[in-house]
Amino acid sequence: MLTVIPAAGFTAWQWQHDNGPKVRLAMLPVSVEGTPIPAGNGIIDDVASRLSGVRGNFLVISSVDAQRNRVDTPQKARAVLGATHALKTSLRKSGEDIVVLASIVEAGSGITMRELKGTYAAANVSVLANALTATITGAFQLRGAASNESMSPAAYPDYIQGMAFKRRGVTQANEAIAAFARAAAIDPKSAMPHARLAEIDMQKFDAGFGREWIDRAESPLERL
Image (cartoon, rainbow, N blue to C red; front, side):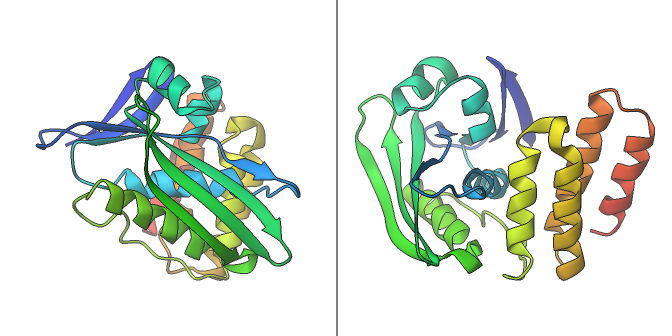
């Protein structure tokens, strides 16, 4: 059973009643060198969303919650969020490409257990998201696919832009809705943007914007 766990001001996803050592992976906010990469944290948020579907004694703490708690190192992740591991991600723009260095670090010892180094086309960042997801699932030998969903490369930039807006909460909900709607229009067969639209609708309802947002949330879910 999937349980949402609120603690110390953050939420996380965990699959219960599974064997094996417990892993609490904190997704640290992205570090960008040089030219800004606005989609950077959106990519990490997408990876966290994919990992929430992994079955195992595994819990993901999103970069949104890490940032909210001013957690930017594995040591802080352990002290503040109780993380056993942390994902550190550094991005750098190089022409039309993005250079990435990502490390999975044991929060207690500081030992790097796995790294991802590579250069990815900025026009197709879904490949980077796939590589980060595979790095994490491989490091922890996670059972089950992290995501059975797919999206066309043409729609992914708008989707990631929506994720970047979504992480800022209801203050930029309208911008996130517009970005996810563009992604859905480009790839109407993908369930991913519709699921995120429903999440934003529920966020607006929870923030007191009115009952109609529950009705709006039902509409994208019906198209899944």
